[in-house]
Length: 98
Image (tube, rainbow, N blue to C red; front, side, top):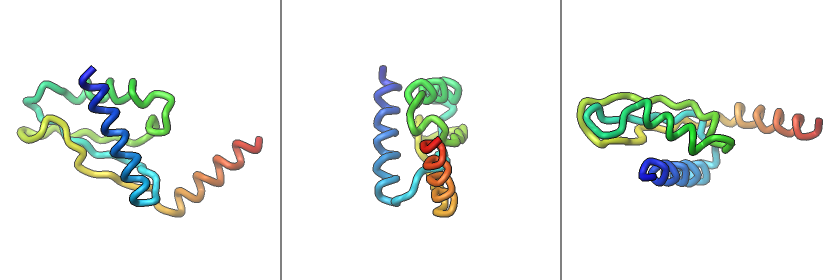
């Protein structure tokens, strides 16, 4: 339950960052503390469950283990370049017409 609530807040953060930058997120970088109660596999399992059938499902995710620090932290966001976004929108538009 706690993990699901945490992930929903992370997804809200993703939305706010996309609106702020006017670009779609391509990749998210997380760090997980080695000595916290959350491990990489557990986090990824919950992430997949929460994002299943959503627009966040296909994001590239990297998770680095750190020896100390916050239990879970977003350490970076990579955004789709404008040319990639335009290509994606064109492809989606063609698929919808088919």
